[in-house]
Image 1 (tube, rainbow, N blue to C red):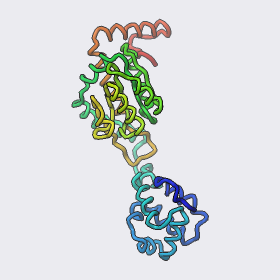
Image 2 (image 1 turned 90 degrees about the vertical axis):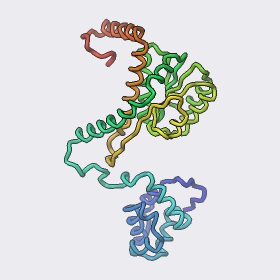
Image 3 (image 1 turned 90 degrees about the horizontal axis):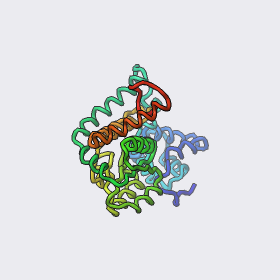
Image 4 (image 1 turned 180 degrees about the vertical axis):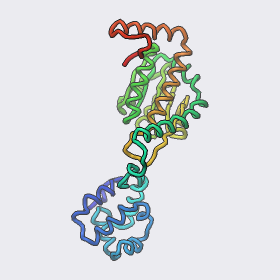
Length: 297
């Protein structure tokens, strides 16, 4: 199999699994050894791999070519890339069977940990300044990409609409880029990203700033997106080895969102109160309900 034209980032783990049934028995030993410890295999010499798998050096070389690599050196480079993704995604239990705690308790504890750590960050964040920027904006654009940030971009839009702010959300990278090129000094972009490393979003925010827009970023500190921000509201993800549970960083981002919007609501004072009163009246007239029902379902 010739891979000279393939990108360096192709998934070597998937390739090994795909090729395994057709490998010779000796080569399958090499495959098993590698999949058991990607990091160790990426650092081992060809002689060590052969010795640990109880095969010849020639077998290791044949294995490398059988899974699409030019030689063992390329194989080790691809293994190092795969190991960087995280060994936790290759473990059979993936953090799922090593604790007697109920699942609800594990999820709750992770959420609580994320909120506690990010609470300290939010106490030092320029929330009032960011809220003032939103209050003065002629138009607010919320950018989010991926699972959590896409959903929370709409959440931000819902919250700002309740306060009478002109707002739109864009989750498609190309649309973000197009919108960014139309902005001006009286516009604000709110960029949501748990990592702050999505290339399309970072570039769209850079374009928006080039045309004078202000950037409020809710993202990881020291990330490329954070470095661009005029006002940074930092969040930090605390990931565990339990890979099946959705990231608790969503809750940290939602807390940051709620703090920012609440600050804006308080800054608007009577204007916010009257808008929320109208909304409550319109909802109760439509659905009925008591005074303590939430604004929306």
